[in-house]
Image (cartoon, rainbow over all chains, first blue to last red; front, side, top):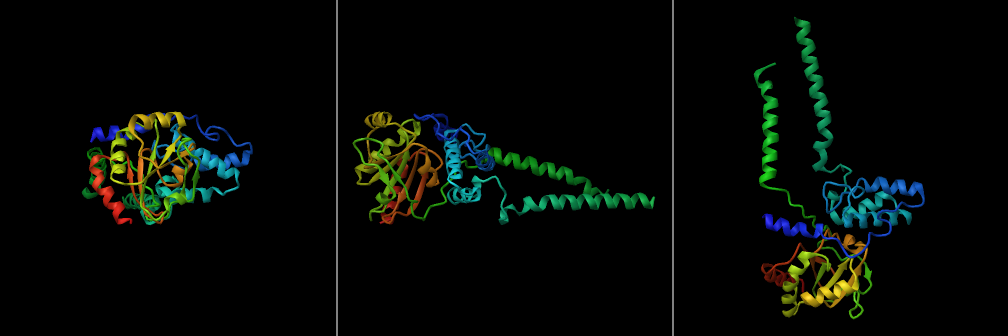
Length: 132
Length: 175
């Protein structure tokens, strides 16, 4: 198991033979476009360091994904279209933005449920005190 | 507060600890499979990675004959470990095309001289852009592609000897 993991994680540690892609660590000259790209990159998950966004990751594949995002934004593509394109390839896994699909319902409902439980507990307390 | 309600925090805590214990015993699978399986290979055209070998475009993967598409790199250590398996598949008549990720002609030819060259075509993907468009998340990966250019199966990580019969069967089924 650990040997298998060690083998699987090996390529992540190895560095390639090429420098980072042109737009990997370079801002777009148009500030509005760069802001859009930045916002999107912070919501895309790195495939290599799986807890990080591609904006935060130093992995080469993350750099190549930043390059891809900036190129497409510069070409006038909408961030939502780029996100959809990536989801088509890697699944909703690649996006940090929660979707409305059934698997995410607990995420949306949990805060409501917690607030309702809190309100119920407070009301109970007030009623008990009033009775005393 | 009733007795049952008082137990709720303890139950929640136990549930949390059980969750952690379960994830330690059974870690999640970090592999991210491509969602494009059983869909056609996206359009692409890559220049030749080596002067002596043709590059690779999506049309080369829809020639009526099933093939393997190997995503590799000379700087990737597990790629060297699967080289023998690819050579063995080649010996058994399997056609293998490749995409070289972030690589240079010199490093690739040194890698192939050392580990054997099972490839018909090698496309150079310098910014991993075609790799991303395939939904591939690392090196090495191997796709089984049928004669119509439809991606049938994906292997994440290096192929091993144990994979050979399965790969051959999948190529047969893709005919």
